[in-house]
Length: 172
Image (cartoon, rainbow, N blue to C red; front, side, top):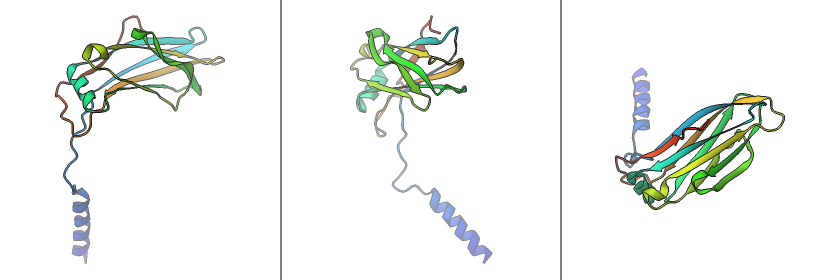
């Protein structure tokens, strides 16, 4: 009886580890992540930063194998009891507003995309403004900016495919 039980459990473990239809191809998504913190209070209720976004030839090729877009996401968090922060995003290099300065719940992210054709056309400067809502005493805010390209799973992505985010000097 014990032998049967051990064999049955071993068989279930073996079957659960089998991969039917072969393994999934590796998912290669060239990605860049930039993180930072800002302290906001009544004396300094707002802050901002700028980041340079750059894709190399391999990342541009990978982008065109997929949906042809660069995907961006901005996430802000704070440990204080602030329910929302005022957050605005713009393309500094193009004097174009992506998201006007308006309340953003801490459960939400700002997500946007853009398309470009060549390496030089893909380089952009992103400006982010973060402000406390009226009546808030202060908050220690952490932020994360992510840029990625999404080629299909089966795509042959170059070993050198770089998406780069760099915080510009003079940004807080």
